[in-house]
Length: 134
Image (cartoon, rainbow, N blue to C red; front, top):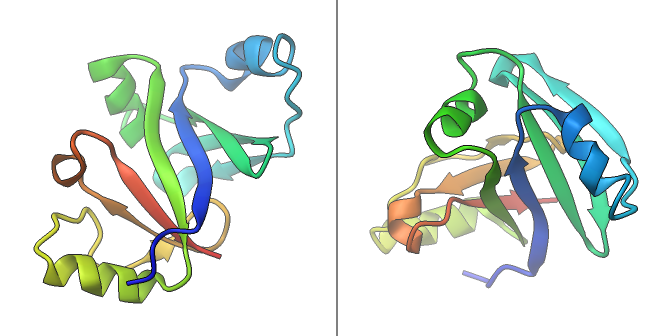
């Protein structure tokens, strides 16, 4: 397995993108590059580039959204860290062979339109990690 290349994005769970932008845009000066609607996943995501990485503000688009559950349990804050990899299928196969607990055995399309998969926080010391192949 080739190690991850860089941090792609940090997913931040928010109750309201509009309210969160009061800080990230108005106070920090970050610019929203796009807002992605993912109704099938119950998400609305604002992308804010920050250097080579992106801050993803993730708002639930319904009470059954995973982010709604996260917010109810933990409140707003960092949801996950996403790492860029060159070969997501190879990375997943390697991690599976090593007995690493995965959320996804196979990649699916993420908000960026690229293959993604998640590693369970119990395997990483408490951090939900997302792998992204661009």
